[in-house]
Image (cartoon, rainbow, N blue to C red):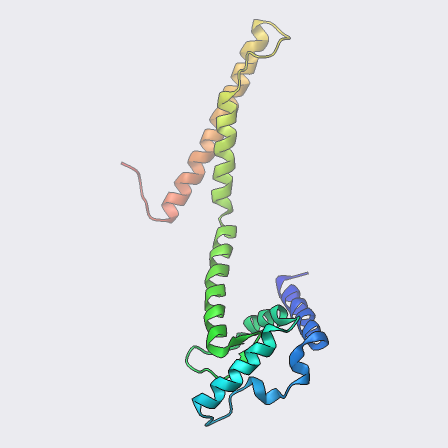
Length: 177
């Protein structure tokens, strides 16, 4: 399943959850939207009532998530209530979620950074091992163990150096002095 298919599936699940259990289904639909030319004082009273209905709704979280997914709300115009939030609150929440999601996606994309961490840990582990710790074998076997360990350490160090050099070149660091 692609991420687009997953998003559409999630929307359908949210919508069916809302359709099955929303408290607003039995209310006047006009309660949730400000009419053209409606005085602010009148809208504030209706908006407060709508938010009270939403706060007691068993599917409020699903409604809020669907509203955020749909991009409902506007920073400049307070004209709706959805999921217990006004239109301006929805727009602000959507912007905050977008920033959080972008940061999470960036962190997930840094597989190279995670690889560097893993290689560094493996290098420290290898460097801390005692190649002479095995009981079987004589001097010849111990020399082979040391040689094998040194080769692993050199290969790990070379991998780390190669990744760091490539990262530095991509970010414009140039050659270190």
